[in-house]
Image (cartoon, rainbow, N blue to C red; front, side, top):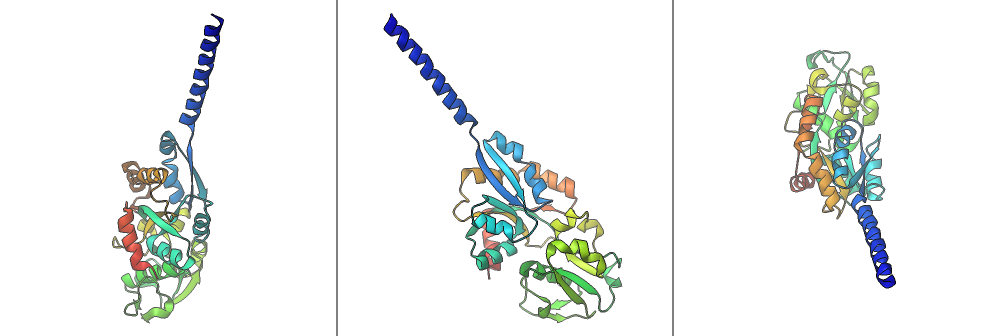
Amino acid sequence: MKKKHIIKTLSIILLAVLAITFSACAKKQDKLVIGVSPAPHADIVALVVDELKEQGITLEIREFSDYVTPNISLSDKDIDANYFQHIPYFAHENSVGKYGLEILGGIHIEPMALYSTKHASLADLPDGAEIMVPNDTTNEGRALLLLQQVGLITLKEGVAGDATPKDIADNPKGLKFTELDAPTIPQAYRDADAAVINGNYAIEHGLNPVKESLAIEDESSPYVNIIAVKEGDAGRPELQKLLEALQSDKVKAYIEEKYEGAVVPAFQTKEVADKLAEEYRP
């Protein structure tokens, strides 16, 4: 009897240990850290935190205020993914910086636009007007392409996304260009006649490119903002779940309702984004 009692007691203890172990494993959460720009990126990612938690993934959002640090942090594996950059910028920086990153998928487009507090229309811009543009390679080229799109300048033949003011072939108004770090332009643009501002920084400072700009990129823009990960990580199940959550109908509806055209959903597959990136790789 005593032996049976001991065996029964041990069995109960073993079952209790297994139950505790199983419970701990069931509650174990995978953790992802994603680096983002402020609005709209941070807001969009915050939308899927609870959904991912239900799938066993704890998502930490880390905000960056510049365009350089997020890729360095991802390259150094301080974060698992980043979401702040469009495809041409990624293609250039990943190649030049040798960061060893790859695209997970595309999420949205933030139309770049031209703003002014001094002039009500493009026609009102005077000869010799000062135009502020971003000073990083891909965003400056993008800004000049916008100015060409609306007829203010003409770029040299064969010049595209890497254009600088030196590549302007025709400048009938004699526009003068002031090159600044992209994040600082929304704070300084009132001092100039007009300024080209990135969509995320415009939103952050309360500007709506659809309602308040003199000119805005059209729907042909290739500047899709993507999720980037370390090379070889795109197949990680938890990152695939992150992408699936960010490319959901819920996120699409949120973007369309909240931003009213200032941000446009653009759910690209890795294959499509990779093809575009190859075209912009230096």
